Amino acid sequence: MIARLFKSARTPARAPASVPAGRRVYAIGDIHGRHDLLIDLLGQIEDDDRSRGAAETTLIFLGDLIDRGPDSRKVIETVMALSDSEMDVRIIAGNHEEVFVQAASGDAKAAKFFTRIGGRETILSYPIDEADYLALEYDQLAERLLTLIPRDHVDFVAGFDDAITIGDYLFVHAGIMPGRPLDRQRTEDTRWIRDRFLDDERDHGKVVVHGHTISDDVEEFDNRIGIDTGAYCNGRLTAIGLEASKRWFLCAEGEVHEEWRNPGTRG
Ligand SMILES: [Mn+2]
Image 1 (cartoon, rainbow, N blue to C red):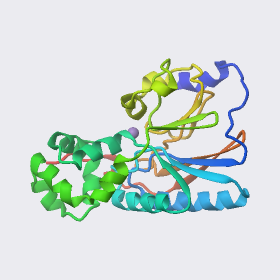
Image 2 (tube, rainbow, N blue to C red; image 1 turned 180 degrees about the horizontal axis):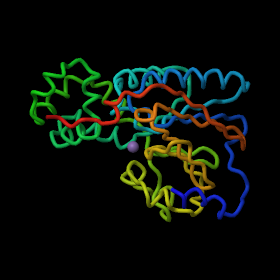
Image 3 (tube, rainbow, N blue to C red; image 1 turned 30 degrees about the horizontal axis):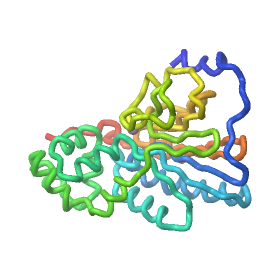
Image 4 (cartoon, protein in one colour; image 1 turned 30 degrees about the vertical axis):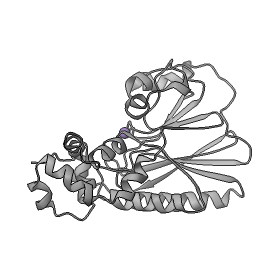
């Protein structure tokens, strides 16, 4: 972590990154079932957007909307409603969305893995008793998920993007594989990568805005900006705002329940 703090000081200065004239972009980090923080942050973004005057505004979700926190179903419903509204909404799939879609499609192995990474809380946000849930074997659980989770939720999540480019910025869930062309990135990297990306000091051609790896505060470097501030475990959900070469951050803060920090496995 110390090495990362000194990274930006060693990187030579270059022209500031920007988004095209007339555009304004907000990107929201990993929500992980914290519907309360999402509603708070969306309110802040609405006020901020209005106060900055007219622009073509885009709202980006950086993935991991679900799991670990208590209200994943409500998060999906809220984001579905937003994407059906007039607003320009773009949503990136995180590693948790990838496993959710596999588990909700009847795959028992995926269902087992899902429950190990906080999917238990997502499942229990749908109408099933905890006792019923605990009584199911994984193949039974996978079958139950086919009807428990509405198909329109699964189809919605399955349609999320892998990466979005706007101006000098690239938005992805986890990061990119350094040295590989940005238009030839693999989803296993953009959804799952950690240290090989986080520790790399090269100019990637775009400033990479990402979530996935939690930090206590925003990690802002010349080549990447990490905004996963740990909604479920630190009680902080962060958004970045971008316009021309300006950059700013908004944050919703709330309490953390101890059980969210320790997503249980089944049985
Ligand atoms: Mn993630």
